[in-house]
Image 1 (spheres, rainbow, N blue to C red):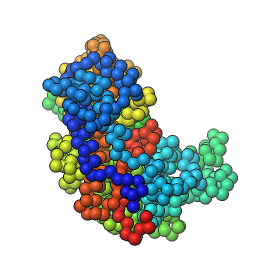
Image 2: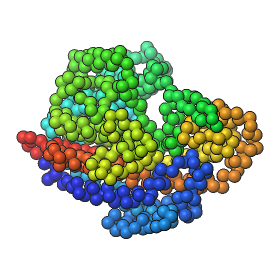
Image 3: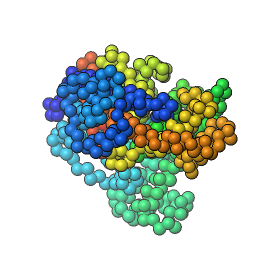
Image 4: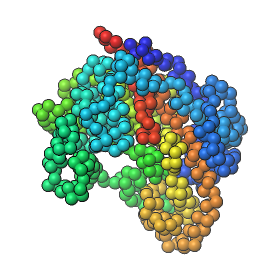
Length: 600
């Protein structure tokens, strides 16, 4: 058993760590839930912090790497964590940093190392990872790293459980699925809610199969044969003087672009409303712009280097009966065609929830490993719930993302779960405490501390512009903050004055009432306080690993509880899979059920 080979974290230990994080966050979570766009209108800095911003920045940039975390068991009071007993303002930045480190996953001592896990699954002997198909030839660095690492773990889980089938939920473009099928000869079903993704994955897999065969026989000459298949449509690749290997990579980039472009109907922008005075102003914006909404402070305008954006999923309740039937027929055709050409990977289209019956999607369902690589929001929670409920699922490896999209049971203003099954909290232990993070705090958990620490920082100036815009809207237009939508105006603006005019125009407001000189006066007034925003956002970044740790430990606690209730999950853990500089959402929840007649 894995517990004898690797060891196991008890449910009592997990609960103790959850208690410790909650005690720390009981004071500090207020910082993560503060609205960045309200920064100046609500005087956020003076409400939450009792020291100058220069002191915060000096401690974070100068001492963060050298200051050792204080062991969790040495906690004594909220004041010890940096907050005053009476005002609950931050008064000691160094203590705050120590406490934040101590309450993040790397220092809580609850994770199993990837090396130990692989050795336990593989019987002590690591297999060679020099596979014939080079992921660097058709994936970017981030995806290549993720697929290489996760595929080895998933293949090891499958071998340990003596099974050949893998089910990938939220499979997206199918990179992981293709690699598992071609390099590990596993039978993989990739299920994604987007028919565009499914179609693109099917085409990509067909190309990669040819590329894989060419790669294994003669890397350069045979790749040329693969590329020639699409030379008529993409003759410009030859004119550019690319090598055959570069042509294959360029081809896959073009395929990805085509999949993203898709039919116009799949990219229709949602409608949003701004209430100004007593009037409603309606406009459309893209999904990325929507993330910059008033309830989504600074997340939407961060680059992909700092956060990772979600792929939208469409609820089956929103689909017409014709669309449901069309998807069903497409899935049947794909399975038939895929099996007829001896492929081991079948992309399928379906919206998965915790109540999904996989047998209705996969006709030849058998014992399987369930996986999810960066499953957005509730899909990560649903993956674990399906795993515990279905006896044919023998192991799970789930890497979640987009915590802001989780439905949260005790976030009272945002009751969003139509099925009564909430994404957070999952464990009965946390449910009993009615713990609530809040959407802004969950959004802050998506920030990448490691990337910010090496200089890939937050876009302070764009956030600064947005906060001043909120002041102008409040003082001159009577705007109600919770209903404003601005979008990505900053990247198109030549100056602060230009930014304000573009934003007002987008909102349908009369910009002529504000002269340039008045707009510039606002900038000049708040420019000396820009460091307050920079320092405050750095505090949010420091807290991000603590909030993420709380969410992931809740998921682990859920698996531990299910093991005690049903005695079917023999071992579960958290493992740091990826390099956080390459892939910030780097932790996986892994579970293995008790294996009957197992040789292990």
